Image (cartoon, rainbow, N blue to C red; front, side):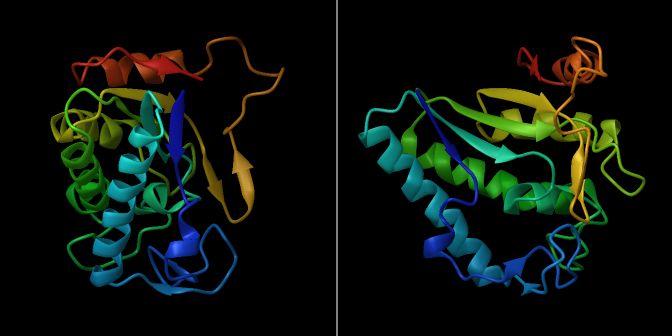
Amino acid sequence: FFFQAEDGMRDHCVTGVQTCALPIGTGWPSRIMDTAEIARVTALYGDAACRAQAAGYDGMELHAAHAYMLLGSFLSPTRNRRDDAYTGATVEGRTRFLLEVIRHVRGHVGPEFPITLRISGYEDAWDGRELHDTQQMAPLLVEAGVSAIQVSGGVSHDKIVGQIVCGPGYRDGYNVAVARSEEHTSELQSHSD
């Protein structure tokens, strides 16, 4: 059994914060998460991983797909309008928070506890993350300590979900090509929705 860490730790965090102060994706007003809060949330992920490991879980999945939760919102140029070290203008800035979380978790649980990552390979939105950005991220994620990447697709944008769940109108394996392109950029075997 795997523990999925997403925004379920919000009871321990400051509420009403996100990547930027614009109500992009959620429609709710918020304020920019400051760097002290980023460090605090990073520590909370490490604490959650320790609790999951102690409770007997076989691994942990970090949910960073679709841009509607905290980790994914940092990865998305749609939502990340920051202008600091976590800037949405560069791949390095967008991945910084997620890499810090992965390294912190890995440091707490050791090398034998699997950490998987759910990520959108391609956000499929006019201003979303392109596939080549995700391909650049994949080796960095592996280097930071991810054991496996589950490639999903789409992004939640202004409360409209685009391509997150493929229905009967989409052929089987709709996202396989995206997953395979990720696999070729890292040491991992890919699994697609």
